[in-house]
Length: 307
Image (cartoon, rainbow, N blue to C red; front, side):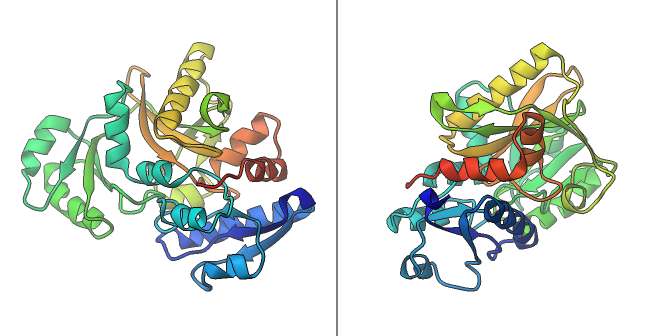
């Protein structure tokens, strides 16, 4: 695997998702080493990015999640350093990290998204409830891993839910809750060459698919095949590709969905540096498609680009 040169597996970082990133990065590092890649751990919370150049790294596998790793800032720095890196570039990373602005792009193209509203401390919460109904979800617009998300069942809960989300981000969304189930579709490639992996249905035992359910509980069920009909599966994969391509994503990513009570799918959000832990969804879908974890990591590394 000398064709890749010296590879930095970048994980850890300083975001609220550091703990998850450490798990993702360790798994990716072990996988690449098992395939003979000259891979090395690199935690930007502990050392400057300039070390990438001074130590002769040729590529970067980004296993950082959240701000500072998935939001375009790191991608911009690596672009200026002329270092190829995995995943999407600056604009797509920034758009996907911002749930509000990604929704604006999808809306403009006529893609289905759940009804939503922006919340402010001085806004009319009663009007939001009248518009969206109950229950609804309140979430920080620029966090991942369900950090800061609260499910609101009564009007009295909305102010506290807003306050919790606002602790994590100044931009807060309220979103209509849809009851038909949560699904996700992982994607590999870029542009017209991008293709979707099998969908996964997520069945948490918790109130919703929260941080613990994602990373630490063993009772969350993942169904792949997801139980959709052939037509429904094809529709969801096509929507995932449209959402991915609309944001300009490349390399790999994941698009999450909610279904309404009539099994109609709605785009929820896109992830440009999905988790790579033992509980993670992209590796699960890849396995069903015949691609083992280490081979998935190598494939992602093969699609490195600059800028």
